[in-house]
Amino acid sequence: MKARKPVCPYCGKPFDPSPFHPKQSVCLSPGCQRRRQSEYHRGRIAADPGYRQQCADSRKSWRENHPDYQRQYRDTHETYADRNREQQRGRNQKRRLSLIVKNNLALNVKRLPAEVWMTGPGLDVIVKNNLAIPEVFILHTVGDFIPSP
Ligand SMILES: [Zn+2]
Image 1 (cartoon, rainbow, N blue to C red):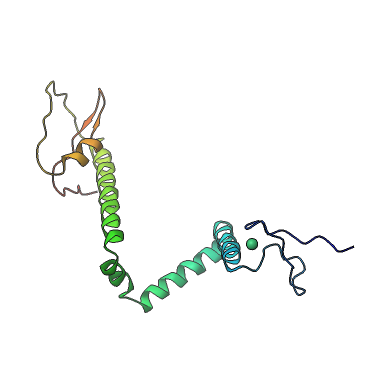
Image 2 (spheres, helix red, strand yellow):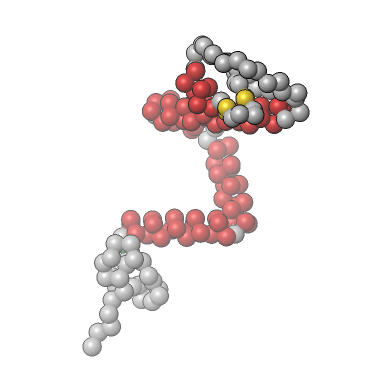
């Protein structure tokens, strides 16, 4: 009687393991092999600091050998570049707000019994990111204000 063929965990199909790798657990289809490799890579990056550093060095050296790649990619992929710019704007806003919060802790904050009205461009982002709780009000200025650390 023939031994049962192993089943690939990714595509669910039975396959013949290579005679050179009798413990092979994933079939040889390119999609399944790519998935196996990327899962191995991700797991090793999480577990092995030396490997993680080696991969970071490799990416750094590739970028140094291809200095125009990222600029050209952004020039030819407008949607990607727009989305990236929008996300960066959000990260910058968040960073600015955290600096303001840090810098305000040492200030003598006075209570204002007034309502606050804001006007100007970019209010949709500012309104969302202003913190208003009974004891503390943090009001972000309109424009590219970055407080010194
Ligand atoms: Zn497979």
